[in-house]
Image (tube, rainbow, N blue to C red; front, side, top):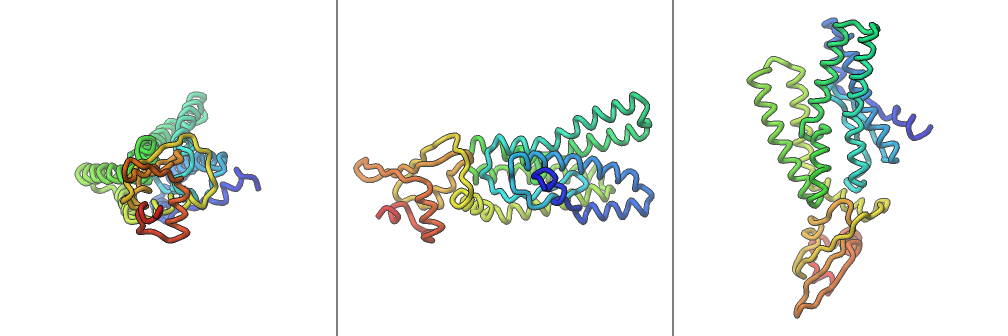
Length: 286
């Protein structure tokens, strides 16, 4: 089984989607849900094939009514350019689907009602997926952009705050303008739960980022950046300044303008292998 065909074995349907399919069967709307499923499937397949191309480790891909959630065994240390391509690969699928539907409609192979239904749902899923809310593609794009400028932990925290604000706005609009749409409420509640889980586990996400940086497969380092700290700085405080795509050297300002330089791996070794989780740089260098 090659890396692309293996993608199909990772795809599962989320219980929320099964619920919508069940409702569709009882309300004679199975055809509409089938179209929705097709759009979502192609969208998520775009992500999966791009991830497989870069040899990312895909654990599972869950299909949801608004798109999907790809669970990757990666923890923030892949090149930002690769990540951007994997994220955008999903929304890009909607472009060719629009072109294909228009062509089929123009030559008379697609009926007018079917065409308008397909186009509406295609654009609706695309626009919803690009909302800057985690774990939607829009939220991932925001995190990718922030990671170019800020350390990993700070970028993640900013992204979470943006997601919370945007989700609150969408919930408010839903309450006043579309309050009877049960499917939309289900989707928004799922997003709220996912966001809450991500916020609750943000420290674990940071630890996984550091662990993979230390134990994981070494990535090509594009840039090197120095972090200057006082000798009283804790190891954890220094880690909060680690950035994606950078290899860090740690410059310690000592007494009488003396300086010491350590490699980031020395600090990670002390933290994870020697279990010096509360140590300062001064305690580390003696």
